[in-house]
Length: 186
Image 1 (tube, rainbow, N blue to C red):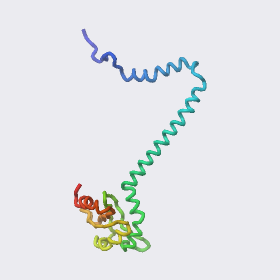
Image 2: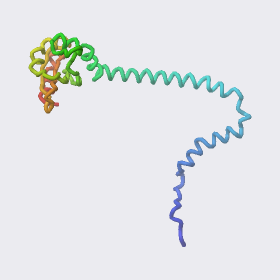
Image 3: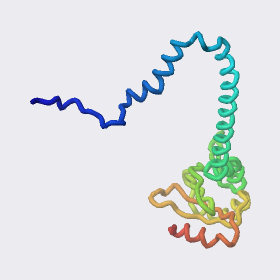
Image 4: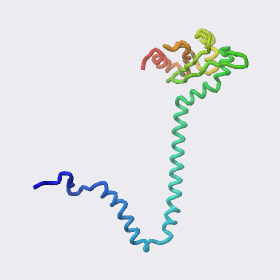
């Protein structure tokens, strides 16, 4: 006797996804179609009068929570740091005489990135002809301009035109953590 191996029977109590979908959607739709005369005519309006404000309120709450999460992330992270430096960058570097003029053009070293934990690490792409020594000599003025307690200059490996300015804004209690991160610790 040959059996059809492509057909499998389900153990008792198990159902297929199609049967589940029919149970969830098909039966209620069929009941509504058959007995729609029993449903009051204004039921749809009453349901909408309750559902629409609830959905709008839930959406507003979710939007407010989403905005709060985004604002918090930006304030704690890169966005806030970037804004702090970007806003004062050109004026601070011009005051420290680290800018240049070529004809009508006002050239400012490029602010590449701002990162860090405990200290802000500001990566700078120097202008043509600038040397890290110029930044090192003017570092105390930059520390004051950006409201930091201390500053340091690091050369960027394999990038001769870039340097990193490390601005420490933390208290003495966290200096050990900052120093550990500067020398390559965790």
